[in-house]
Image 1 (tube, helix red, strand yellow):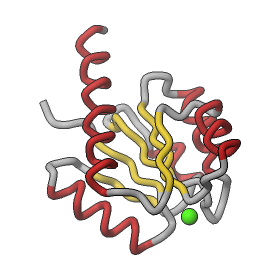
Image 2: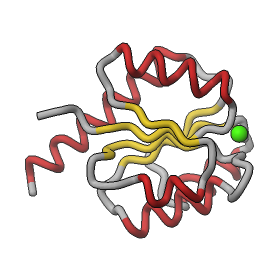
Image 3: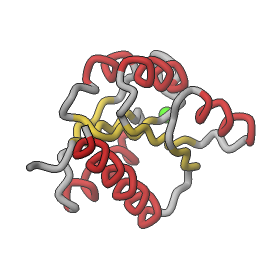
Image 4: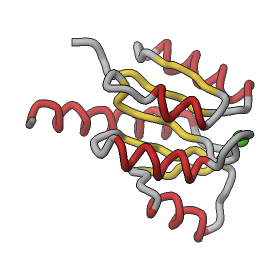
Length: 128
Ligand code: CA
């Protein structure tokens, strides 16, 4: 069975291309979008994890997170943002995110979190 796909929602081209390259090299199928609205339609059944920026050009990532959580309860959502205030973290997790990582981030830590979330998703898939 193929690894579940990762949807990367990030408007910063430098971060997005670097992350896509690294995730790709780890064997993940990565789809990148620079806007929040298209991400709502793109997070289909083949996507196991969404890595979500909050400062997006069209809609706030928090709204993307809330909508994704309402429509895909089993989806893993990892917020990756420069918003580092305690209340931002709380808002992100309360909006349905499973994880919250602040930029600048350590790549090895992000990859470890990606593995953890996809592992959890696989277990959930086996259980159902
Ligand atoms: Ca951004």
